[in-house]
Image (cartoon, rainbow over all chains, first blue to last red; front, side):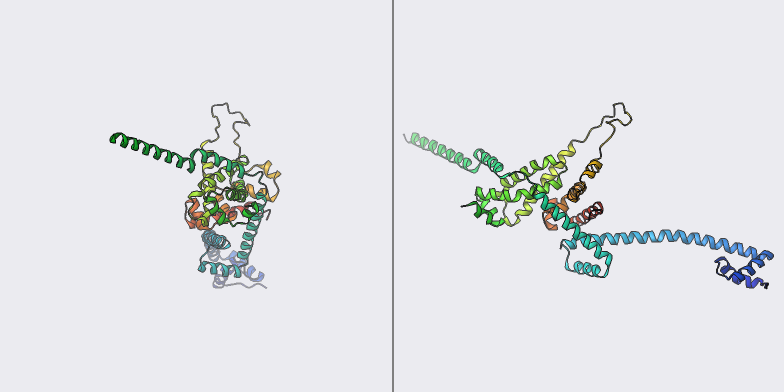
Amino acid sequence: MTVNLTCTQVGALLSFYIDDKLSTQLKQFVEAHLQICPTCAAKYEALKTMIKSLREVHDKMANVVPETEDSAAQVQYNIFKTNLSAYVDNELDDADNIKIKKYVISNPQARQDLEKLYELKKVMHNSFEKSKNEVKGDFSSYILKRIDIQEEIYGPDSFAKVVALFIFIVTVFTLTAVVIFWI
Amino acid sequence: MSKLFYKKIPLDELVILSQKSDYRALEELIKREQKNIFATFTYLSKKRENVADLTQEALMRMARGLINLRNPKTFKSWLNQIVTNLFYDELRKSTRKPQVISIDNEPHENSYHTQIPDYRHKPAEKAMSMELDKMIKTEIQGLPEHFRIAIILRELQGLSYEEIAVATHTTVGTVKSRIARARGKLQDGLKHYI
């Protein structure tokens, strides 16, 4: 059975036809009409190009918009990461502390980040404890010896001696001067 | 007094005793701190052979400067300031001698002169040191120096952000972001291990 559609009917169906949302039968009717009606065929072409260009613009926008959203989200995430790291170190003020706590409770991704941070801390701590035991030799005797030598030369004791000697000489000189003056 | 006696004294008192020229207290103090300082320098310094020298110099500065430390409670952060300053001195020394490559020599293809070694990623060394512990060291040493000193003072020395800010002459905010970024980089580098 074929149904000849009128131009008005086809006009109403055109956008659905372009979106490929018609039933197979209806699609065939529209196709049949487009082949015989140049006006509707022209309308169809015009609509098709318009929709195509609209889609292009939309796609372009779609590419741009998520990007800015992404970078804003990235900035937000970086701030969160910084605060999370400070949270782990117990260096946040009370307000930020509560914020992070709430966020971590409600967001599984954040919780995972937190756990990873703790893991890193643990691993670093263990590594450090290990390297502490790698120390070879004892520096204390060497350093004490070096300090001893320096103190003998410049140390407070020798300085006091020099000052005492100086005062002694000055007194002797003044005394002699006084004695000579008297005589 | 026996050595055992000194071993039991808390750090604060040990510092005060050392300031009063008690040599055995100073000896104990050095013994207590040397491991910590040595380990810190193994993370800070890229050159393994410098670690012992740096440790010795830091301990020397500590022993000599101790008399000028007014508040014994700040001993830990004061000591770390010494470590930090030494580290920066060392950096300055090493940057003063940049590696020189002659451009006058005939540039041979694959010549040994034209190949500049990349010190950050040593494939051979990386392959050999698969052990996590060594990986951590390599990763920390690969961090930019400001990040390195901040994360080490925090994680290994346990300084507060404020103390780190004082030691590295920056603000608390900077310290906060440096530590966070250092952690991010470390996590990135070690993601296959932890």
